[in-house]
Amino acid sequence: MNKTSLMPYQEIEQSIRKKFRKSIWCKFTKAINQYELLQKGDQVAVCISGGKDSMLMAKLFQELKLHNKFEFGIRFLVMDPGYSPANRRAIEENAALLHVPVHIFESEIFSAVYHIEKSPCYLCARMRRGHLYHFAEELGCNKIALGHHYDDVIETILMGMLYGAQMQTMMPKLHSTNFPGMELIRPMYLIREDDIKAWRDYNGLRFLQCACKFTENCADCSQETSSKRLEVKELIRQLKQTNPFVEGNIFKSVENVNLDTVLAFKKDGVKHSFLEGYGERRERN
Image (cartoon, rainbow, N blue to C red; front, side, top):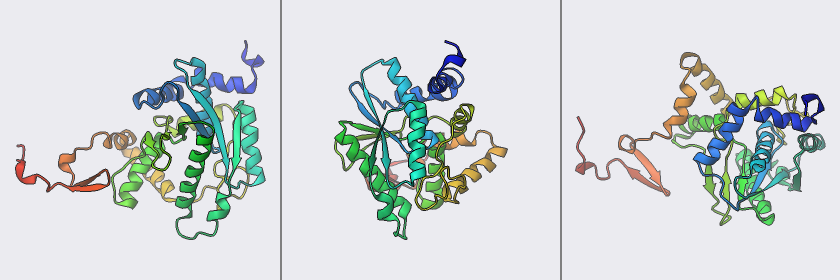
């Protein structure tokens, strides 16, 4: 079958298999294997927000299903928390273009948090997560997949240090505390954002960049709002000019934590100090 005879969604799928095999597909499967994100019999709700990351994730799961090394199920979930008609239409049109059979359910989260002055984004994110778990559970799923990528991970590490006074990371998978038996997974964990953008642009795709009720001015939200995450993005960009390995080093820093050299740490919600058992240790010369 020649490229000219392919349907648009087939050309997009082919780009994942060929041009972006190393930068996207292999990193997707590596994260799934390395962090044990999928098991036989899993039913996964692939959560689609309408942006480039989650739309690509949907296509990657479709590709993974074709290989079918073990049996698992996928449902493509879109929650409409109160999108504008233009944004809702853009999501539906992109899903159709990509040949992704989405299940859309509605909530009124934007309306519920619109007049909240303190931390509306935090509250909105918590509410959206809860609704996703609930609807995924109704569909018989035991996992929800979110489209956070490598850059989200390293930015979260720095944001925690610089603005939250804590050392933590965005985990590749988490058990739900409010929905027993449900788990959150992040299979895009090792994929770079620049590679996602390259895939989008190569295929001439146009996704929502921001569908937030507080910031949306148009269907594609081309004007990014200032945020702490954008500040950290810029900081990393500047650091990379003098240290090309800075991004990898930030990521690896949470893999190489030496508890013998930190003042304190938390385990299962309990804070521990380096002073615990200090008298029993001797400095290694």
